Length: 404
Figure 1: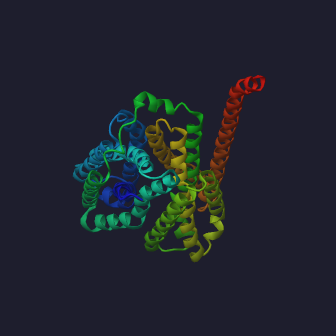
Figure 2 (figure 1 turned 135 degrees about the vertical axis):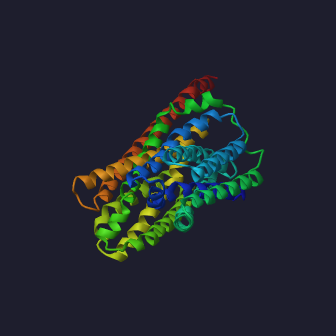
Figure 3 (figure 1 turned 30 degrees about the vertical axis):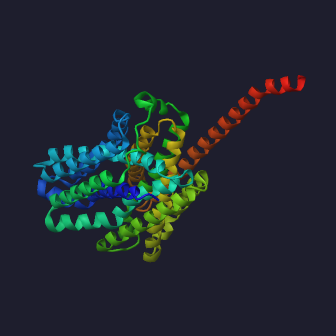
């Protein structure tokens, strides 16, 4: 695997850290800015909104630029957003800075996935994407806990300065390690990139992402009350348990990349089935501490097995112009975050119990499996139609040869 993938992983580590660290800093930010916890929660939404808007927008407007330059420019924007977050004088300024920080997120992963797959042999494409995503999953193990501790001891502004430093390291890594000659701008341009979004298979792939990762966030958004109220853990134990989720996610990400290079569809279907099973068993597994810890790890593994296959599937469906579609898939991940949390909240509000978001997530995983099945059926029909046209095109030649 090329060393250049390390540069992409460093950028992903910084992005993953700044995305998830806000959850742990909400009380500190709320106290310092004299706002309520729910008001501080809007800072999480502002970042997600930046991802959803920035992913397709920035990928589209940079369609003719060198992908190496695009990655560096996106990371410069990332550093600026986090530096402004550290210097924000009030809540409104911090909301704007968090929105700015989220803008490059989706486009970085989208363009980065295209660059990663272009640097390896075809049979290693999924593995290369999983190595880029490795930075994101490792951020949940090391980056987020370390950044949270920094914020608690040095102030939340120090956290964002630290994340800015990671971004600067990523810029240096990208400049040194990403080659010039393999990241030339595509010839399709903006029109070609936009044309990719008119494809039904692309939208089916994006729908699979929304449903599949919506299943994860339906449960994960409410994992703390499940662990404390159902499994009986102390609040202080939750940080360690969330690190176990990161360990599972890292293992699942690497496993999914390796398996998808052998069978993309098989890995995707197997991951969604595993995710549905884990979520369906959550209410039982949360009855004891050991099984609850196991369930958190398995949740991360089952969910992130599907990460690389989903990213690669979208790129294959938009093979002529993959940057915009790949970035749109990152927007789909964040829609899944918001939608899954909302559906899990509905289950809680309906009075079905503290573990009810997990079975609700299982339903979403089954829905994702159904969308993936429809996508497979569409692909098969297209292949059969294409083969029929090829045969028909050669019939006159064969008849002429027989007459001759």
